Image 1: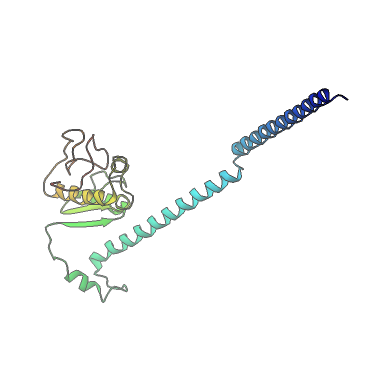
Image 2: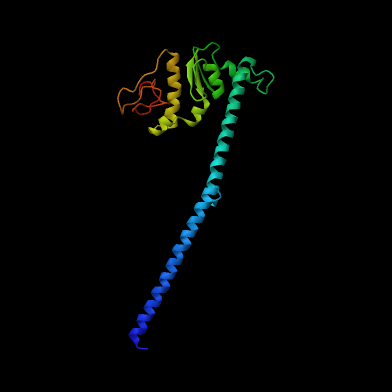
Length: 209
């Protein structure tokens, strides 16, 4: 066979082989993608299951931690009228009590959402918010732990938010009502409801920033 026709024949054969290989790869990829889409719809894809398990585990851990903190806070709160009598703190509670004022002008209390709701009523804190009323700044433990999306989305950190929580509720005890953001981009006055909306201001926890 002459050399040039032979080379042409080899080129054609090689091209056909490459086309068959590419077509097979495309077909396999398409079938694999279709199979994965079916697994995703059924909720049986290994990657999807692994991610869902990780999210579920984190969610369970969060709620267990919140439940433990809530129970701890509720038990501490219940010690006030009993003075710790009948508990392991019976001997040490008087020392804790003696280090506090017997009749303070105000109290700052970190408490579970349920306790905050009960102490703040008839104000509706709905398990989410804090309040300042009857000489008590009731700080919702869930907000203390998790912060607020409005502040986080505006670039605020947890330290700023916690300062704000205390100063805002103490502000109510001192007779201050809610305020509005004076101008976009300015530091929010501490009496702005920053847990709900910054109204265009930047997060701030201080009375005089």
